[in-house]
Picture: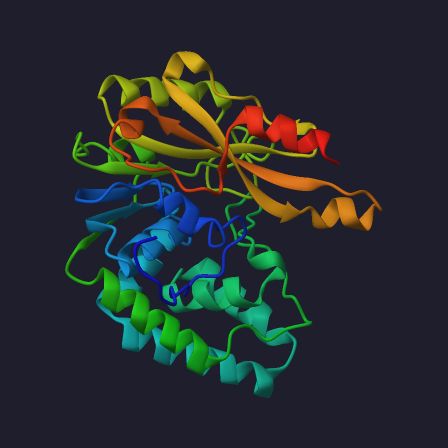
Length: 306
């Protein structure tokens, strides 16, 4: 990264790339016109890039309408959003354990951004879950009360400030979000991981099959776009998900993401690696790759040391 600084993160979100964002942003060359993040979620990569002026403009999109609406509120009316979150947060102490279910019921009836933000701050693993009727159905994590209002307000206001005037928010599928992208831009894709993304999965508003995503990538590669893709990974020697084909003109790198908590619980010493695919087009624009990126050869050598 070119500069240092505290990146705001107003949206708690399972699967966020918050801890890998600086490495991912290190793959973005200087002078980028627009950074696109069409599977936005918490938009961790765009937030990191905006904080450090890695790109001039940003397009964040998400097929899930409440996510898009929440980002619009953060950018367009941050003070109102922070005020309503604060009201909800203090209300839980007065009402007690039934409060979360009351907010969830209100959200399922009228999905306002502040209600959604409060549910994500309080629910188990900050995970979006829906039932077959399309209703948010994750439960409250009673071990915590969610981010304190002053912390949430700071994150909301700073995120709104760094995105203001240079960011478009779209509620659309990824190919529609990328309709105007061209060779001057960079695209970061973080689709639902394989194994959690069938045609209908209660962790996502809509699943996506491997074949569907591969076909979409082929179209993006033909447009000569600069792509960075998070899609699969592994723990130790065990690979999770089907690797993307070399025919897509993508080069595979991996980022060490630390010890697997699940492996530790099972008494095993497993290291988690996140896969990062970079298009050949983008590689021609990068002067120097981040040192945290590992190529398969170096990973194999590292495994021999254990």
